[in-house]
Length: 391
Image (tube, rainbow, N blue to C red; front, side):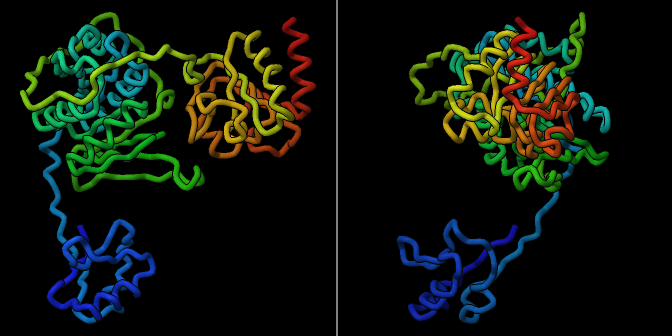
């Protein structure tokens, strides 16, 4: 770990003013007691060290101690549920966890937190060797503070090497918080995972707008944390017999309570990530009123209507209908795109579709590189033809 050390005994008013004026990021200021130091805008560029008054600021690099990786064993999947149903991303992560665990001969664990374990046994049909359950009436509804406390207790007691969390609203809230508490690394929205023989998890995700795929490692701390979008990996087939065991853990009596006094479940809305048939519209749409025409096609096909980012930003489509890096990852049996160019940001969210039909007037549109059926034509003409054929 590296940081800037400000030697207050050498910093007078003159030196302080010189350092404040020297910083190109306005990152040096006095605190409430008058000491000079960096604020959150500091980039560790070391200009204050190299060009500032001599001896006033030092750049300190501490030796980072490495941990004994052999003490950390197992790949854990956080079993997200709503008290009734298990989130489908859990089954996808369990399948991937088995693949990763095979490389290093580790077991696969599932972590179940709630007031009851009425669905925990189902995880034994999907590849979990052990399901660790932490049950308490105060854990009935998700609240990030008590759930973080329980997750930390699990890490302390079991010491898993890696933890996989679904990149859901709940997972995106819980994962970073527990990783920060444990002072370990976490990679968000991974699209690929690989395991090295030394138990380092290679966490791969799009970066710089999807133009590169970044490989991220947590080499000096454990456990390794990542969140993974749904529909990225395939779920394994359910086995007829449960294979593994459920381990009931004692909940430590630290404060579990939160300031959440009431929980109201929202009515479940259609999720494009769950659809088997999708009709997606993009920048080629001429006017907002035309959305109804493509919605009619989606209805006839028994599917849902989705869109690219352009229509969401224009306010024509809701954010819940967006496919891509900043939207949903989808994996339908059939995806028909109309007037979508297929930029990398969009393509990253639909690459795993079973059948892609693309309609675009530009024969060089990137969408045709991933489409199974390519139609170079006006989207309105093709829409009209499809509606006639469907009757």
